[in-house]
Length: 427
Image (cartoon, rainbow, N blue to C red; front, side, top):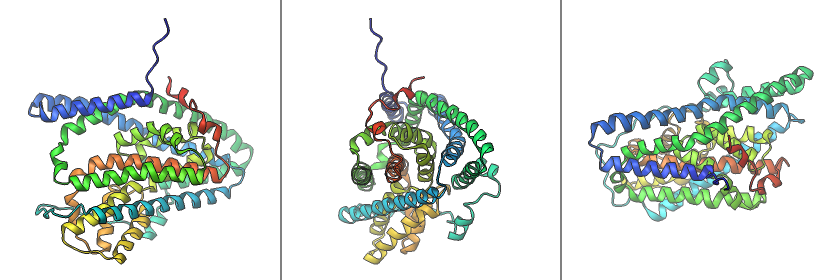
């Protein structure tokens, strides 16, 4: 008798996600008043399992980024290639962010999600202060690399790893000996990623069950037009714009790209964190999509830090929405200012906690809209944040493929091989 075929990781994650949504919804509307359920399930078992899963993913981010970047950098035969990689990656991320917010503003102007909604008297939001340009530049360089790793300051970690890798490449035999150690360490970390990928369905189940036990559909009802419009633009950007870039710039069939990226997208959706999803994104980009490690180890961590396409879409729709709710008209100059501010801020506010809302506050202040209007949309932002993260993860992978193609570091055979990287899902 033949052995029963094992379900794919994607199928198992989807099953865990759907089961969690169903159970969470049941708890919300049927057993929500039960103190035992709330104490031991929603805020007990589900919360503990979900938080352990997220923490485990985040645990790998710093060592993975540092080690993979060092390995990739010290393998470069031409150190000047880093400058080209950085310029291309940052340029691509800013271009897609500008497209995203332009698309969002245009859609919001046509649909008018804020029409007919009365301003909520209790809406309130206190924005954090955004860093200045000079602070951002200075803060790229760590005065204490260990402290940067402890605080998960990704840009500082990236800079230190690049400098460390370049030094290894230039020093000769000591660097070669050290490279062997980092290669082995990288293999061990990737094995940890594979282990976590296999327990992901249980973590996703717990996260979804807790989330939907706490969030009811009635919260979405009053903001349905805004919610659905942001969701539509996010999906359109992820399923149309990115595949178009893959077809035109990477010169490959985009359907394979979306199919192979499903696991990373599901991780991004369930965790709502590009940083937490980074190990899975890097695994997918290098092992399944054919991007070389020297490119992927640089573009993926950079994208997880500065790629804000999903957030830019939310900002575009939210800006028009808040203006309509408050009865304020924005002209062409104001909309252009919104596009420019959001695009530049996507790099300038990278790594700041609550970056999405800080960026939105900056945009609203720039065009003279009331910042307290952010309080109107906070209620539904958690669900949209999950979709935004899946879109951002897709953008990180797309830019990695395009940059790798431009550097002739893209393996088409791996890209078109349906089985490439699949064996890594098996323990």
